[in-house]
Structures are given as structure tokens and as C-alpha cells.
Length: 479
Image 1: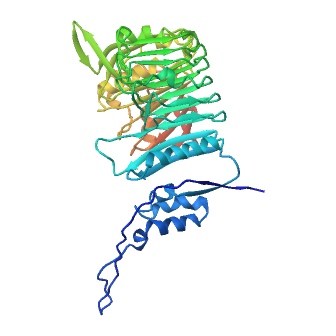
Image 2: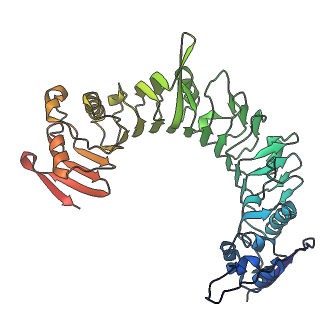
């Protein structure tokens, strides 16, 4: 039989002045004044109503009007069934004129005392003050032997916040503001078993992020301080994600107790410099998966900097198995040289470039190329032909064309694009917005890829799988 538990606190009494408006009508039946009766109900009456409906329906009343938006979160009487809380998502929008920080901390304390295993905090206030102030956790002690996952979003943390969470496995810190001599190592010293740590923003004044947890396996850091320092004292780290960093060895200090354990490296939105990227990657000898997503390119020659351009990008790693490279639309690289004998998967999104030496990756199984043509001219078709030839040895080749125009090799370029590419057997082609016919596109591929056996074709939202018969006759095998 389920138990009903009562959790209660009392807020300071507030005085309200209620203005009552009466709707009057003319003899013709037209309204002189219209009243939003739901919004005009006194707060005390709304709370009495909420107190009498099922708990699962209380939060739903927040959509009735702006006045009802946050009243449910400030109820003085809370009833819950069963004795424990498995998970609490605390997403509050409250009026700062009330004791919103006290209210939020009591909710947190309530969850911890009732053995919550997962706690997500996202607390905002109505009528924002100027200057803007985040919800402050100052002086709060997170103490629980049960909590396993903790997420804190848009809060202010000071040195007075303490963690005593011996069984915490995952900690997520989103847009955190630090004050009063905050020391990151002291902050998480009470969480010795953390395996997953995400810190997606820290202000520039925090110069050092020291992670002393020996069991850490996954670390994600978004950090704006270019002169900062990251120290990770974990010999079990497997996955590392950096963001908003200038990958310069001489400017950014990076220390890991054992780089030989890292197998997954992701660099989203980083500044990439030709002379420093390869040495940085080579610090991880067992690296298997590399993702460079949305990077910004810088090239320096003779003391002059050129933004959004690199003459070449060189990646050399004997253990690399999966490589994803996605450039911004304004970035360009003349050539991408990949020396990775064990490479099995490669994905590229960017402007025209060449891939000399990629044929040496004989174990390549899957290749996905995002084509973003500005103009489908002769130069672009010549580049596509070179791309097809460079990756012809891959078992599965996928071309995704982000263009409203169809990829149709013009007949007038036949002599320019010869010889044909004979060793591509299977091709996946996706044209995101297409007005062309299937036959027209097929006719444009038959002569350039005479050895093609199967074509998976997607035009807009319509997908087809087409098999070739004899004499370049095509058979639609499935819709």
C-alpha cells in the first residue's frame, strides 16, 4: 500500500490588493469591459485550488495564464506518494520578489533527503533585476550517498558550495558563474567516483581547471580562457571533448596523467593552426576516433595572418579508425593529407579540396562527403570526379549534395572528365532539394561510373534503390 508523505514550508505572508472589474453590457448585448477571470483570481484562492487537485495536474495549470505560470512552484504544502524520489527535474520560473533562492534550496534539500538518484537544476526568475543575477547556490551543501547524476544549469557557485556525493557518477555544469575565490578542484573533491564530467562554460577569470578524480572516463570542457590550463589526474580517461580553444601548444597548457588511455577526441568550434594541430593529436597514441567540427582556420605566413584558410591540413595517426572533419561555410583548405593505415570511416563537410594519399587507407569502409556547391560549374564537376576517384576503393561511398540544383554531369564535359571511373560498385547519392527526374540523373552517372552495380538515390524526400542489369539497363528494385 502506497504511503502519502507531506513536505511543508511556510513563506512569509504577503499582502495583496485585488481589483474586481464587473462586465457591463449595453441594451444591445455588447460588452463594455471584458475580464480575464482566471488571471484575476486572488493568489490565495489559486493555491487552494491547486492544493485540491492531483499532483500530476498541478504543473499543467502553468499554461492557463502568466499569473498561473509560477504559482504552482510556490505551494506551501506538497504531497508525494511513496517514500523516495528516483529523479527530480527542478525547472523553476519564480518571481524574485519572493524568497526564490530559499525556495529553490529547499526543493534541492528535499530531493536529496528523499534519496533522489538524479537531480537536474534549472532555476530562473521573473522580473530580472539589473544587473542580471543568476540563482546562487552559495552556502549550500550537496550531501547524499544515493545521488548518481547531478546537472546544474545557469547558477552562481562560490567557494562556500560543498559536495559530499561519494557515489556520484555524472556531473554536468552548464553556464556556471564562479565567484569568491572558487577553486574547481575543491569543488569536486567530494565526488571521488565521477566517471563523466561536462563543463560547458567557465568565465575567463578561471585560469586553471584541475580535475583530480582518478576514475574519470569522459571529460567535456568549453572554456574561453585562452591562457588557461587544464590538468586531468585520471589514468582511465577515454573520451575528451574540447571547445572554444585555440589549439596552440605554446599558448594552452594541457596536462593529463596518462594520455595513452584516450581513444576518442572531439574538437568542436576550435581554432585550428596547421603547425600545432598534428602535434596536439599525436599526444594521444591510442586515438581511434577524431572529430573536428565547426573549426575556425588561421594561417600565418611571414607574420601575416589569413583567416578562414589553410594551405593544407596534415593528419597522421597509425591507430585512427574514424575521422570526421566539418568546416565552416567560410573556411577553405587546399589539400587534406591523411596518413592513417587503419582508417575505416571518414566524413567530410566543406568546400573544394583534394585528398592526396587517401588511397593508402586500404581498410576504408565508409565515406560520407557533404557537398556544398555554390555554383555547379566546370571546376566543381572536375572536383567531384577527383573526389570519386580518390575514394573509389571504399566499400560504401555516400555523397550528400546540399543544393537546390541536381548533380547531373553535363554531356559537354565528357572529354574533360574522362577517363571514366570503373571501380566504384556501390554509391549512395542524396540531393536534399531536387526537381530533376531519376532517369535524368541516372543518365548523367552511367558514363562516368560504368562499373556501378547499385545506386541508392534520394531526391528530396523520395528514396529509391536501383540496380544495374546488362548493357547499362537500370532496374528499380525498391521504392
